[in-house]
Amino acid sequence: MEDFDTLVLNPEWISQGIYKIINWVHEQEKYSISGVDFPTVFEDEANRFPVDKHLFLFKLIKRYELAYETEKSGRLIIPHLLHEDRPKILPDFPVGESLMLRYKAEQPLPPNTISRFIVRHNEEIKKEGKEFFAWRYGVVLEDETGSIALVRESKEERMITVSVKGNNKTAYLNKLRETLNDIFNSYKSKKPELQYRIERFGQIPDYIEKNNPLWLSDSKIYNHLIDNRSYYDDYSGKDISIPPIVRDFNITVDTLIMGGQGHRIDRSTHITVSLPNDLRKEIESIIPQIAAIANDLSEEQEEVMAELKQINAQLNKKQPTIPKIKSAFSSIHGILCGIAANAATDPVIAGITTILKGLGALGG
Image (cartoon, rainbow, N blue to C red; front, side, top):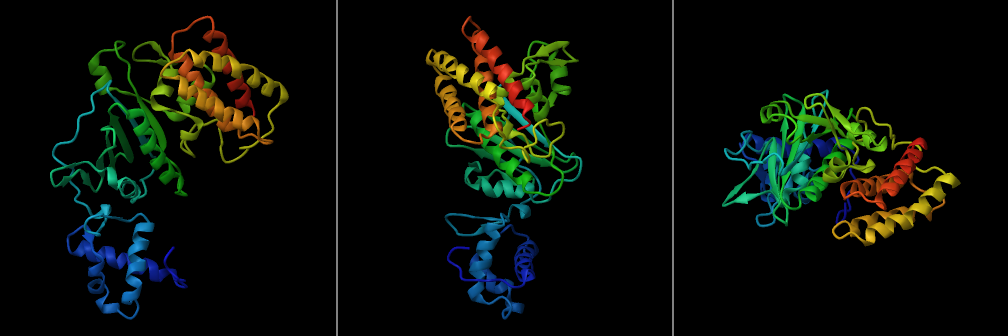
């Protein structure tokens, strides 16, 4: 670590030192510790853990995402030692005004998953008065725009759920999902399945929507998008359009959780492959058409142009990254499907669909 000229020859020195600190805090029935407490923690092993190594251990605890440091007091807060009971009152997330996803695992989740998440987002923990909305198995967050998120773990169901509301809910959910995906992808164990709550307003009675919500996996949603197919819902007997779902949750190839079930896209292999000339020509010919449509858009113009920039950047490489091209086209496809259809957009949407299938055949 920076600021330290330390080489640890015995890894057990690190693990035993850190566990001794955490166990001491637990025995005190607390969830935080200050650096000034370290001499007390190690008073029986002062020779093995001398004072000049206490700051090193302090920073290691932060590095391993076991705790975060408060700005004002300089204390380490250890989320895994927070009280188990959640706050009596939690924010409400009305159906239709919120976005919800969940990670559902077949085996018990790693015990420090939610703790690591809280550490990474500690500056966003919602506070009312002196109360912080964080407990051992969950946290309420608020971003700079006022969007609110509730993230919590259910050990019995082996699941972590994320609910977000506010004007910036899609972007905020994307940020939180990125953190959780990164944490899960850092584990060697089998990854959970990422699922999204899909609303079906006006199609089935409210009590069915409440008691039998529709959850679709990220792979199912993405595969339906690639095939340009709607999802048939048994309860409503209706086809549910996929592009609005992809747009609302900002689902791309990069948001698919590695190791989930049913993915056609394996990002661990064939990430860079040669782009066939005929497919390259199709892509190059459709870019000006997409740009022309984007020029007539208002809110979506900037997003479409950014995706086109991503595509052009890949086309200029000798070995383009196929998933990035596919992700950009998928985002554009979702945007165009969400605007009013006309003589200009219909053939472009059809062309993008053909390109997506061609990219999918490359296995990138």
